[in-house]
Length: 512
Image (tube, rainbow, N blue to C red; front, side):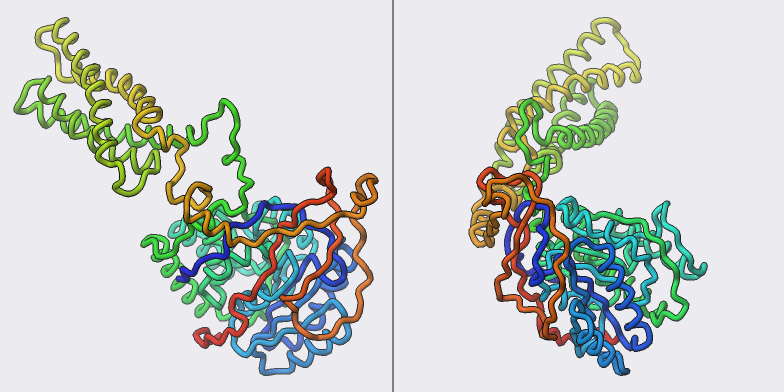
């Protein structure tokens, strides 16, 4: 797995502007390999649909994966005839390689792709990209397995698709419903950080990208789609399934061993409501309570087992003290790591010492309860002793949590990881943030004139452009209109200039 550093923290998500003719808002990539028959009707139908229904400027990019038939000629003719169509040729096969190469070089803030057979109904395209344009989501996928999806396909492909997604849920804890539907979109600023971490260059590219995005806490929007199976599909099911299972093993192993660090992607936008400082709502309290209850439940079982064991050869008071001492050390260590997120050995001795003080208070409660029980009856039953100890431990548990939160781990009461890249006090974070590209501001025509909000303009009339692939170094001027503009007439653009991840990908590993 790739472990190279990300370029830095992403700015907060914002509603994207309506771009001028120089910079389309949407870039739809169609990866093809020997599709000389289907390519022209696909592009023509997609172009007609976007021209009629899409309110922003757009581009259609044909990504040719080393085709050996007349597909390159068809793509060149479409590029010459339709201004919004661009053609890009790769000399190596692999859908993932094609998407990464074209997405990395594109200047459009929203990047999408769909299969050339257009199995997915195009009416789902605008709902797919709308949450990305608004800034609500980071990625969007079409789902054939959603309840409201309408799908026509044979039982063989239906069984394979559902089995594959069950494998993803069981092995990688994936929560998205359909990993392999050829209908996805991503914000360019997210792709800039995420794509360098995706290793696969074939059909597993989609799954790996989604798993990493989900593990990093990015928001994935799912759109139910109408989908009709293409009986002439050239996908080799057995080989694709084998490669996908190998990819599941590779990604699962990397996540389990920690060789792929995703902490640099966690909450990269800084607009998570859980990060807001809201009065009278303690940050991290709910998560800490859950963690403390889980640790406490396990500690209580451990304590009762120890007490029952020590009781075989000692009195109740001695057995209680020994059981509490051993379980208290284990409880403090578990809460230190799992509940309050303290990592490393720094302060461990101090925390254990403070934990022993808390243990002393718990010992006083439970010992006092046993003493009261023995005073009430000379020979209490063992079950009665356990019941009294459980009640006393519940009271001690509440007190232990409060003392842990306000005294033992008071410096970690927000539940933040010391190594959290979002922590501004972390020197490593400050170093990364200092290299993060700044977001330019764009004055709106309305703000300059001091007038009211101006609605988004319609897509400008396309101008004939040459066939040169995207220039990722030039600067594009955009006019931006957005509800709720700042008083000074400026607002921050959420996208960043994208540099190609691997503009000259020559990895021959994918033979498809």
